[in-house]
Length: 336
Ligand code: UDP
Ligand code: MG
Image (cartoon, rainbow, N blue to C red):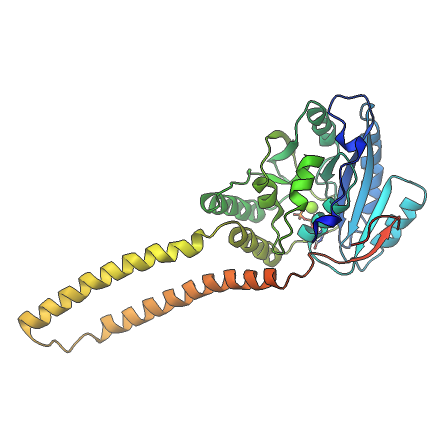
């Protein structure tokens, strides 16, 4: 992505918090085969955000991430009678991380809030986010105090991931905070400059820095439909997150290699001593086989880790765009 795609500051966007001019906040909503959720989302979100204090108005930017159902038609029909709804159609399913990036690069608001369409990010929380933003916060994180809508397996694997990630990564990610956050335009500009292909938004959001305020909420179950994230997709995202954010897994093998070299040296000295003192000792089949198998396995594992990084380097050097836009509605927006 070139920096040309990033919407520059407008006079409205530059207005300082607390000033009297009306500022726009863009709700970015990535959608993938969500036909049953579009209308309930609009019915619930619009009254809440439109009831928020004067001085702020909202627009909704849907990013259709290659849906094959009636999602696009339903959004366009809602947009036909409302000027505050716009839509980006991606040319295929690029994944939520890319869809959110597309939305951020095209959002025009002085602040943006990424929001899931399934109402798992309760719109009532936006009221508090806006209050904090108007008091000067650049980032407001919505932290899930409880998530009764998610299975124990999802919660356990998520916890394990946070523990591993925060042990390895230089820049920790806050526990229990998803993509549901408010970002001031200044922060959006910074995030949009990170055009990497293996995207893990939570890590990128932390990496750009800026002081974040936190509010807590209870995350409900999905209002309609099923999660679009299979465990396989989540696993791939977790690997992307770790390998894109830290080189510690590579470094571990340097230290492990040094340790094993020292152990091998000591063991060689013992064998040499034994042979010199007591003569040639032929038996040793079991220990030889164990060493071959253990070291063979470790080599494969280390190669696999190196492969993970090489694969990502390959993806980066190809310099393909993170997403491709099929169409924009209204079509007056800047095309990629
Ligand atoms: N989503 C998307 N592309 C994908 C998968 C999901 O745009 O490839 C959207 C989805 O339509 C929803 C949001 O991302 O608005 C969160 O997805 P989901 O609710 O399935 O995730 P979960 O809440 O289970 O983590
Ligand atoms: Mg959801």
